[in-house]
Structures are given as C-alpha cells and as structure tokens.
Image (cartoon, rainbow over all chains, first blue to last red; front, side):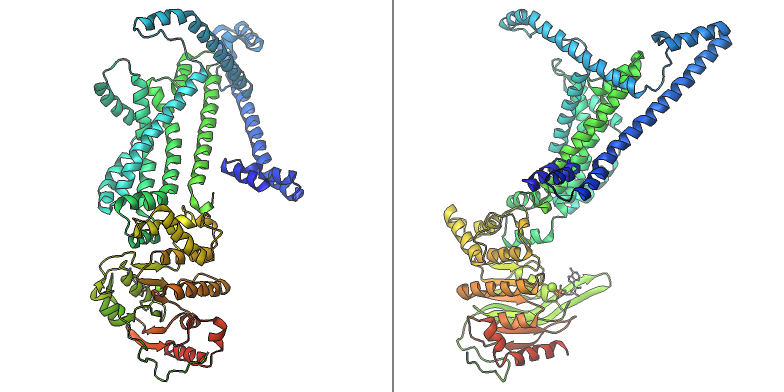
Length: 365
Length: 271
Ligand SMILES: Nc1ncnc2c1ncn2[C@@H]1O[C@H](COP(=O)(O)OP(=O)(O)OP(=O)(O)O)[C@@H](O)[C@H]1O
Ligand SMILES: [Mg+2]
C-alpha cells in the first residue's frame, strides 16, 4: 500500500511527498522529516523569499516613480502642484498612480478581478444563450447557422483556447515527426541527406514559420467558415515544435540495441514486424523524450505566435493588455505570466510521467 | 560411473553420425584504419549431429566472431560454413543464439519473448499450440510461475533462463551459445548449467558453447575445441570428454580423469 502510493506519486512527479508518507507510516520520522524539509519546505521558503524581494523591488520602483512625478510637477508647475501631486498619489487616486512594476498584492488583486470578470462573462453568455435559443431553433429549422456569442472572451476562455491550440499543434507535430523520424532513422543514407535540411530548419524562428504558414494557408483555405487564425497558429506551433521529436525519433530508431536487431535477424522478422515489434517499442522512450521537449517548445512559442497571428489566446491577451494600458494592465500581464509558467510546468509534468511510463528500464508494470 | 581416460585426445566416434555443422577454410577479416585485421584464417571445424561442443580460447582470439558467423550475423570473408548441407548466407531461426547478455525484449513478458520466435517458426500452429510450446520450455527452465512477468522484472539469471527457453523453443538445428553464463555469479551459473544440460538431454540439439571457464567447458561438452590466439586464429587442439550422460556435477568432479582433462586444457591455454 505504502510503496504503491509512493510509486504512483513518483509517476505523477509528486515524489517530494514521499517522505511525508513514510513519516505517517512511522518510518524513521527524524530522517524523513529532514528529507521533507529539504524537498518540499525549502522550495516553498524560496518562493516566499522571491515574493518578498519582488515586493521590496516593486515598492522601490513605485517610490522612485512617485518621487519623479512630484519632482516633475515641482519643476514645471511649482511647489503647490508638487504638494497636490503628492496628496493625489497618497490618496490612491487612479488618475495619478505611478505606472510601474506591480506589487504581489496588486497582481493578486488583478487575478481576482480576472476571475470575477470570467464569472460575469459566463453569466452574460448563459443569458445570451437563453435569449437566442428560440431564434436559433427557428434558424435551424430554416437551415441557417445559429447565432453565437461574439462578446469579449474571458481570461479563462483565453487559456482554454491556448491549450486547444497547443494540443492541436503537438498532435500535428507528432503525426509529422514520428513517421518521418522512423523512415529517416531506418536508413543511414536518408539520415545524412536530411540531416542538413533539419539542421537548417530547426533554428528558424517561430515568427518566420508563422509567416510561411500564413502565406500558404491564405491561398489554400478559402472557406470563410473555417477559423483561419486558429489553423495558422496551430500549424505554426506544430512546425516550430516538431524538430525535437523528429531528431529524437530518428536517433532512437537508428540506435536500437544491436542485440534486439540480432534477435530480429535470427527470427527472420519481415520489415513490418521488425518496425512494429522491435524498432518502435525499443525507441519509444526516446520518442517520448522528444515529445516532451516538443510540448514545452510548443507552449513557449505559442504565446509569441498568438500574439502575432492575432488569434485568441493567452498571447493576444497579454498583447491587448499591454496596448490597453489601463491601471491594472501591468498586473494582469504578470498574472498571465504566472499562469503561462504554471501551465507550462504542469504540461511538462504530465509529459514526464508519460515518459516514465514508457521507459521500460524502470520496470513499470 | 566407469569411463577410461583416452590416451589420445581425439578418438573415433562410437556411432557414425552425419556432420551437422562444417566450417571449411573459414576466414574472417575486419577492415581497420591501420589495415586489414585477419582474425580467423583457414579454420576447419566439423561438428556431428547431436554433439555438444565447447570452444575455449584466449580473449580476443575470435570465438565470438566464429559464432556470429555461424549464426549468419557476421559476414564470411572466405571459405564457407555448412549447416545441415546448406551453406550459411544469412541469419535464421534454424541457428538459435543465446548471447552473454540475455537480450530479451524488455517491453515484453517472459512468455511473449518466447512467443515472438515460436510464431515465426510455427506460423500454422494454433494459438493454443504455440502457447503450449512456450509454456513447456519456460517450465523446463524453471520459470513455470513467471510466464507473465516483464523481462525487466526478472533477475539476470531468470532472464538468461528465458533466453535458453527462447532458443530451444525455436527447435533449431544448431544451438549457439556465446558465454551464456558469463555475467552470472557462480552459484546461478551452476544452476543454469544444470538447466541447460537437462533440456539438452531431451532435445539433443547440436550445440556450440563458447566459454571462458575450463570447468564449464568440460562439464557441458562432448568435445572441447581449443582455439589458438589471434590474429590468424584456427583450431589448435581438441579434447574428447567421454563422460556418460546425463551428467551429474558431483560425479563429474569426482571422476578420476577429470583433473587430467582440466590440466590438459589449462596447459593449452597457458602456452
Ligand atoms: N567489428 C569489428 N571490427 C574490427 N575488429 C573487430 C570487430 N569485432 C571484433 N574485432 C576484433 O576481432 C578480434 C576477435 O574478436 P572476438 O569478439 O571474436 O573475440 P572473442 O574471442 O570473442 O573475445 P572474448 O573472449 O573477449 O569475447 C578482437 O581482436 C577484436 O578486437
Ligand atoms: Mg566474445
């Protein structure tokens, strides 16, 4: 029971909870307490230290910007204006607040505001649905498309869109990179001939891929009902992110243990059996290592691509807030930054557990 | 047990059996950056049907090279190898190999590892029949309770047992073993030697086993073949081991001739 739960935890990347379980089952409390302290409490502590430094830094920036404003008022409009400015800043009036790095508290406030915003938008959506349900039924009967909500998406909707794009991009990357990787991996001459192309294309910036995809999609897809910006962004994400999987797959296939190849030879497996029974299973661990890199690269380039393609998602959220320049815009951008980081971390953890499941050396049954 | 020491190492076979494996003028050249390296040259060897032969020789003399050539996993540079009247061209299940490392497919269970070969060799057998064959051999190597264990969950010794079962289940004409117990501790090694001989006793498959261990070579084989050191290695000498079969470790060790055989082999290796 205990060992099983530890194994499960480890599989999900929650290995730092292991000592806690051991303590509860009465196993060397002193030693495991120490391990828990270093593995779980110290990281927490470091987060607190980070927030404290951030808070202090934000305060310092705030004060220096406030001083600058007061000084500027004094120089341009005299002593009275300076005092007025100081009072205005101290009163917390929005019109004269220094606009700088937001403090942790402000960011938390923005986070709450975003959650509330999501709630109100969801309510609006439900309301809208109710109101148009009858009309939509009629339209459906007439063979027309239903009316859909076209209002502003909430922050959570944007996250959903981004996740959808990344998922589609990674699937695309997988379906392109794994088969090509296997074919290249099987033949040394193909590998050398493709190597250059891969080496040249791999470092190309996401922006260029986006433009390239844009050029092609624009001409190929003429149906207006299709969501072009979504198509463009997920294809670009896939193209940027697939290289790690491609390289790892071809490496995995070309470096299959010589013993396994000998087994295949002695058994006279045909090429299909050889690929599906020996080569593919043997290279699965490396393929999944590649996919894990692909997922993290996809998430990283996604923000930039959404920003440029103006497709909805976290990227455009960040860009819009930046352009918007409202009082809490900076704080919202930082909320987005943490959300992006956290989701990236979670995606990586998921891929890590999949990867662990796939590696046969660990003896996962 | 009453057997007499043969004064001459090579004695005529009591029953004339046909040759199962013949190497004629066998040559192996490895191209290296500093020129060709001739490992084997003009090597002659013939092994009778149902004979168990072991090969000893210094490290690097070309024993594995010879074995992989017989298996068809290594190109022949000159001469030829004939297995049951057919010259060897490529690898095939009629020459099963047990390597030093068990080389099981780690993503499969013990049963599946044997099954993948059985499916190739008996394509027309029913599913139940194939499973019957796999289970029979796994049971014979002492893994009757571990059919569905993953290869990675088995100990080295158990993995090598699966390797032996896998080889026998192919019903090969020749069984090739390259230091099959080299990676095991001496206790496990002894157990596996017994397991190997026990199955071999039933199947009587022509077998060639490479070993570094003089005692192992005597215990297993009807004939020990001694290879000269490379380059240009060939067969240096041979020694018949006429102990009765089935063999029992204790009886073999206590046999009055045992130490003479042992001394003979060690003498060859030390000169
Ligand atoms: N692919 C190769 N290319 C070049 N030289 C090789 C190759 N394989 C083996 N050799 C050389 O051929 C010689 C014989 O090798 P082989 O592995 O057959 O020896 P061995 O008798 O099996 O040795 P050991 O007892 O250590 O296993 C060695 O000197 C080795 O360095
Ligand atoms: Mg060897």
